[in-house]
Image 1 (cartoon, rainbow, N blue to C red):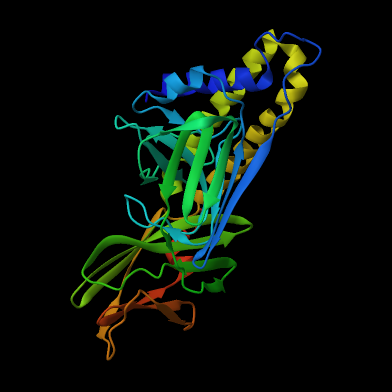
Image 2: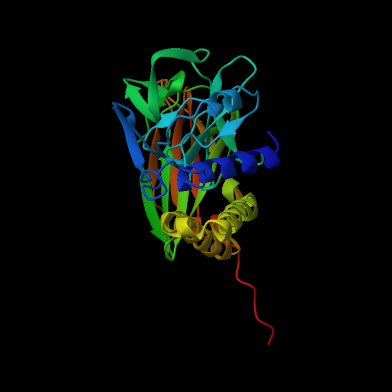
Length: 355
């Protein structure tokens, strides 16, 4: 979907939410804005979704049927997800963490569920994980007046007007996290308990979060292992898209501002939305400054040894030698040990000031 169409629909959504359309009763005004929560708890962990719940309008159905159409999965701020397990997707395992969720319609009348890290409206340039719908859109006998998300076990169900879509989620257990701190850099390693197997190539096995001065950087942990060689690469995917994320939010703030120039009576209702977006922009500014001091990628070579007993799932143990932490990963018939030095791996060396 083109950026023009995406922002066009975003504008339509804000017009509807803020009540810019003519009401029969001008004094009554639009209905209050509302955020809802849908939550599922499984043995592997928990998924919590926070979303806006717009009222159904018939024109939504025709728009949502266009192949490639992307929707924020609600209204106002994008839908937010907090995941404490992993999730299977078409692009591999989704690590635990905080995400934004959208949906994309396909030519087969199925909606793809999209997970990505930026706190902004979806952009094709974002690193994205897709979960395919269990089947094509279903027709509801009793239309849902408001957009609703609900869980039935490991099924996520969306209902809106006459439309209903279901996704069968496959959560992945996470090993107990490994946490450490070196030179004011706190690091948390979360390794997914994936089926133990080799060879592996750039397989996402979890996430490492390095935090300094309250600002965290998430590094996707990608494992390559074949025979007696193993490499663990840490990639900060979000560092590459912060500028685009910020631009997206600033564009929405500008569009709302122009709408309010024509409809100042809706200022009170719009202010919380604008304030939320402006707060996110401030957070991104802080992240950009911190990311300038952090490496976008880091690679650690591993030492591989044979196991006496085959492992059935990817496990992790650790040692903490001086100025480093050694992560030991169970890989079927072998173990791979990686000595990680958080300050050295994640922080850029300080530039020496000229004398």
